[in-house]
Length: 210
Image (cartoon, rainbow, N blue to C red; front, side, top):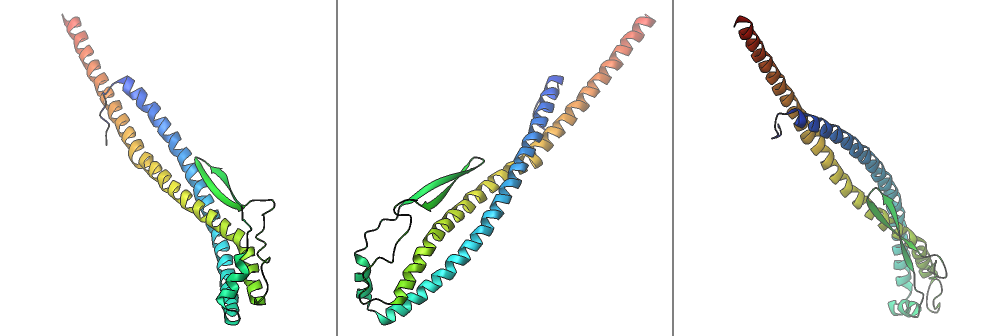
């Protein structure tokens, strides 16, 4: 749709500059979109792998827990774990992708970098409970990583939508409108020049015949 501007040479010059900026902006946004999609696919693939691993180990954990529950009373399991005082320290790091800040959760390195879940009262407990807690210790970092990756996928997905809308607005609305307006102004200026030329020729003819 033609823009509502005056058909002047100044407007034509400004529109040509605006068109150049719009085209460059569109290219930059397309490059950004391509990179975002690449990051999205990479995180999605990593997320699938992590999810499969966590789910597989979680099923094993539940299986061992069911076996433990069949041999030990629930109160005994609770008593074995109730005196645990370890605090798991979690830290958040950020990864920058364009204007995005992606949060990543990790177990803080140091004295509590491991769960050490095996340090519990062993009376009235079973090897199945040991296996259950060992799996939990192993998959906790993976669960944090999976949560971080899924958050990254969500944030990148939203940014892809926003960027795609901007690209479409430039590619299918702004740039065509500017081009149409440039064509219209160029046509009008050519008409004006032709009319002025005809007018001058008529004036010249009158002067010569006068």
